[in-house]
Amino acid sequence: MEFDSALKQLLEKETRQSTRVIYMLWDILKEPTKILQALGDKVTKRGRERYIVGRVKGLHDFWDDLSNSPPSNIMRTQFNRLFPKRSEDKTWESGRKLAEAVNAGLSL
Amino acid sequence: MSPCNFTNQALIQDETLFAICLVLEHGWPAGPTFLHALNTLIETVVIHDAVYFDPLHQFRRGNLSPNSIPGILRNSDFVNLLVQEEAIREFPMETVVDTHFVTDGRDYTYGRFLADAAWSTDSFAYSSPEEEASRLEIYLELVSRAPRLLQPERLLPPSIRPGSEQVESGLMVGGREILLMMLGRSLSLSNDDLLTIEGMNFRAKAFLDLARNTGLHLHPFYLALPHQIGAIHQNNSKALELFHKLQDKLNSMQDQEEGVGESGFGRVPIPPLPEVMFVRCNESNDAIPLVLLDLPNVHRGLRSYLMNYEQC
Image 1 (cartoon, rainbow over the protein chains, first blue to last red):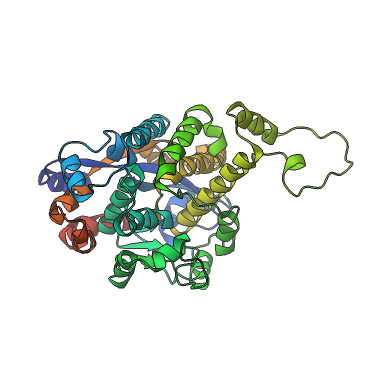
Image 2: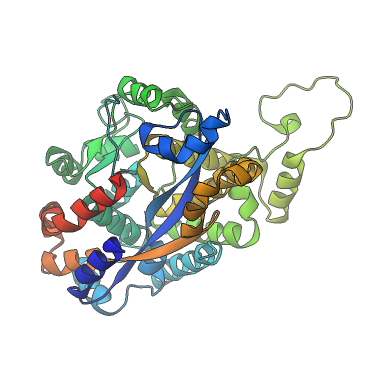
C-alpha cells in the first residue's frame, strides 16, 4: 500500500502515465537463502529438499510502445522530430500487429 | 556472503544496444524494433541500480568481426560512453557469478548458460532494414498460429537432425518432436527454419535461467520477446507442477501466487520515461546519450524506492 501511494504521487506529477509489464516467475530452489528461509520454514520442518517461490519481474511494456504505430500524440511528434528517417508504414503496422498478438497471449 | 548483489539490477540483451547503434550511428531508419530497444534502455537505466549487458563476454574480444554484434558495440561511441559513465556494465566474470550461485544455494552454473546460449549462433537481430518487416511478420504467424514452437524444446526428431547417424534400432516411437515438426510443416517451415527457431528458443531460455538464478530483471530485445514468453511459460509450468504437489503444505506462499497469477502477466504504472527523454532532447538526437545519462539522476527517488521495495 505504501508503494502504491508513493507511486501514485509520483505519477500525478507526470502528464501521461505509461505502464510496465510484470510477471510472476516461479523458481525451484534447492536451498533457500536467508531471505527465503522464513517462507520455507514450514517445508524445512517437513524435510523437503526443494522449495518453490515466486518472484515478480518486470519487462518494458512493448504493447504500450507499439499499440499505436507509428507512435502517437506527443510521442509521435517528438519521435518524428528526433528521427526523420523512419521505417516504412508497413513495418510499423507489422510491429503493431505482433504486439497485439503477443499481448493477447499474455492473459493479462 | 555472495560477491554479487543483484537487487534491483537488470540484464539487457546485446541486440537491444545493437538496434540503437544502427539508427544513431549507421543511418538505419528508425522502426518499431528500434523504438522498443530505445525505450527498454531508457527504462532500465532509470529504474535499475545497474544494467548489465554482454553476458557472453564478447565486447572486449578484438578478434571478432567489426560487423558482428560485439564488433559494432565495441566500436560504438554511444555504447562506450554508456560503459564509461557506468550507465551499463559488462556482465560479471564467470568465477564471480559461479561463486554467487554456490553462495546462494543455486543448482546452476555459468557453463549451463553458455551451453543453452550457444545452441545456435543466430542472434535475434535482423541484418538489413528491409528484413525487419519480414521478421515481424514471421513472428506474428508463429505467435498467432503455433506458440508451442516458441518453447525451449527440440523441434525435430533425432532421426532427421543434422549429423544424426542412422542406426538399425527398429521402428522408433514418435514423441513430442514429431508433433512439433508437423506443426512446423503446417506453417511451411523447413527443417532449417525449425532448427533456427529451436536455437533462438534455447538462447531465450539461457537468458531467462541466468536472470532467474541471479535475481536480475531481464529486459529482452523485441524480437526475442516471443521466445522469452515461451520460456517463461515452460519454466512456470514445470515449477507449478511441483508446486501443486506441495500446495497443501505451502499455504504461506499462496498470497504470492495471487499477486500476478500462476503464469500470468500484469501491468503497473510508471512515469512515461521515453516521452520525458524525447522532450529533453530538444529535437536533436545527438543529445540522446547525455540526456539518457542524466535521467537516472532526475528519477533517483523512484529508483531508490524500487530498490527498498525489492529488498523488503
